[in-house]
Length: 99
Image (cartoon, rainbow, N blue to C red; front, top):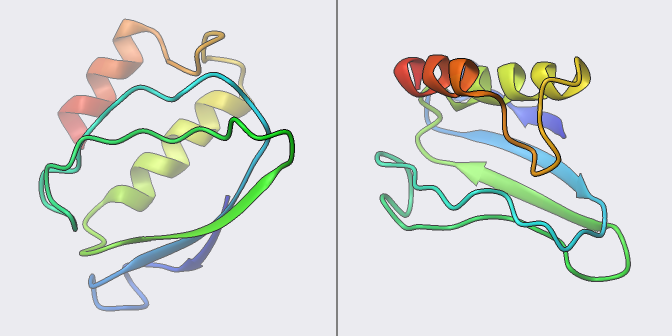
């Protein structure tokens, strides 16, 4: 994930990220963004092709989603996610309370 535009750069209107997703049959947990477009639409990401996928994701408004991604990827870098890409209950609680 590479951040292209931050909420600070867009006066809170947009977070734009460039993503590269390896091929995988494992879906991330289904979730919603209650205040971002399209608000409350259940979704999850995965790449079930045989090739790496490349996409640009945009979050409107930016809110504090950048902080969420930074925390989540820090957990991944520190090997604190399970085989399904989920943190333990303590970290899930912290993330949910903050975001």
